[in-house]
Image (cartoon, rainbow, N blue to C red; front, side, top):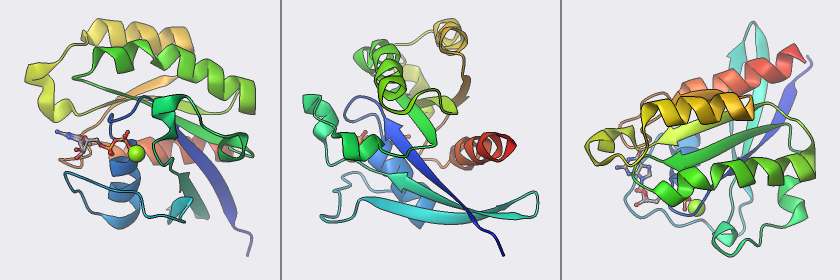
Length: 168
Ligand code: GDP
Ligand code: MG
């Protein structure tokens, strides 16, 4: 049987919850201080979508995003993208546009979801809901609000991307 495999890159400023999201989705766990396992480039999870088996490979960085030092190898062959920012980090919201450009430079136009993570901290929000909606529209991608901590909407992010890829 044919199996579809999709490489997904997860970009955004440091500390927005990228590694935590990968860990949550692929292992079902959440910790306050997730440290990347050395030597592992990606974690994977297999799902069924419209009767098709889809293998999602979620590529993590080892913190290189903080130094703007993500290698070309990280982006190579990526078919989908999670563009993440944090509810409590204004800089991460303002950086989302340039992350989108970076991914486009390396991968061309690939299915992308704008993710506002840490919505469990909405009382400390530094991003207006309308601003986030406007940004999503400007970038031409769907906005999903997630809490990796509370496991809200994480599955929806990857199901949406898988569906976009299957439809192509
Ligand atoms: P990365 O640098 O983007 O990979 O971010 P990490 O996954 O290392 O997460 C940075 C910090 O944010 C860690 O302390 C996580 O536990 C925390 N974190 C991640 N997601 C959430 C969330 O949805 N809510 C809250 N409150 N904290 C989160
Ligand atoms: Mg990380």
